[in-house]
Image (cartoon, rainbow, N blue to C red; front, side):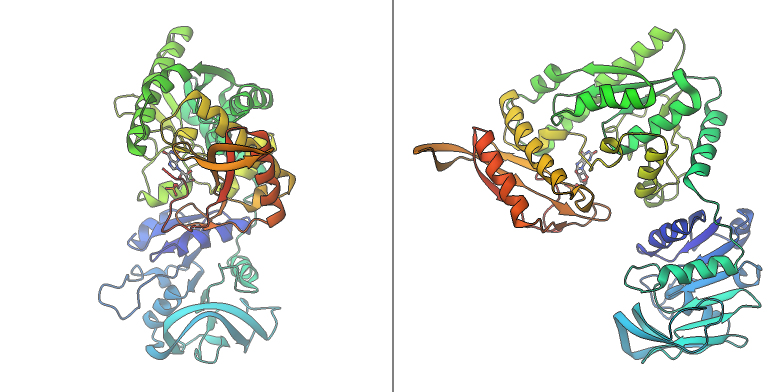
Length: 512
Ligand code: XMP
């Protein structure tokens, strides 16, 4: 494993992902972790991340004591580089000139890290503090106009540092720099999907033994991949529960019922609870109230289904499978393994008193890895490449009260938008694409020589990395044109189509 020591902000996750792209397993640890604890993980290499602080700020995170004497090859990036330089006796100072963004870098000596790279290249910088003299024993391998030491190394001691950010796409040869560090550290590229599948299956078998597990399928990628993996591990001792709350998109329930079962052979229990959800939602227009109702009903239905599974098998169900991903684990402070239900999972807030132990086979993986894992497990592309869809479903995409008729209108409009997006080959360029029905708004239109008084539909295609921030997607005009024409022609109740051009922030991705 490669440990990525997190000095703050979002840098560490990106570094960890890039290391894994080099087929080496990586794990994020906080900078406050004592060195002994890090060494207990037997790291092949350590990477010190960037961070928002300056090494001279009071309270700036320190390099764990003894790290550079531990004999583990270490790469410092940005803040990590400055901390390394300062700690080992180099000169690091606040400079008058900050460097932000794409910056020309001159390679002075290729060393191990920059071997084979061109003398001039563009790198991504973001710093105000600059290292002017490298510590004794280091050679300076690159500089920029305002950073005399932009890269340095002491290959004999296995210590490397770069002021620039090799993990960001804007650094031309960044991935190669990381790869060369990993090679110099003796890391073998053995983190492959085949190995991940095998290791994960083994781990689930070891955890569950001959007991039973249950998994709530949401229709989304994470729960589907988690379920498929656990099914491989324990076969029919896994039961999946799919709650159809009647707020799904067109074809979604069928996809879970048929395609997923066909691909995995999983034991599936489908609960048709549409009446119950729609009854509870009747006349409700407030978004938070809608969410609370949907969450509450979901728990009840899931609990009932879980009890039925227990009765049917005449045997206790001890484990609950969850599709928790690595970013959730990192963001909630590292987690400590199997515990009773917490609230950050994706089945809508199951209560503490549902006494299951958790099986979270994806908790070390990033989303893109989960998708590749799904492919490796033979899941269909429609499931693996599905865009995120919120738990409350179309219930929060109808602005106004939710009714069957309105759901039908939205389902049709949404299906057309999705179809045209797929036809344009843009599915994977768009992070998510809510289609929203403004059910309480009407506008006048003209169609076939007649006046219409229908509802507007909002198209909300966004691009994003992680849904925390998002930008409105610049869909080609001809694609938008086809969506608009088809929706107004084919969905009688809709006479106007508008595009949402708000980024997040200030807007959220969903309208409610
Ligand atoms: P917003 O709309 O806040 O959403 O920008 C960020 C991401 O989360 C999804 N989302 C949800 N997912 N249950 C979910 O499982 C929910 O209640 C929920 N609300 C929002 C949203 O679709 C987007 O991907």
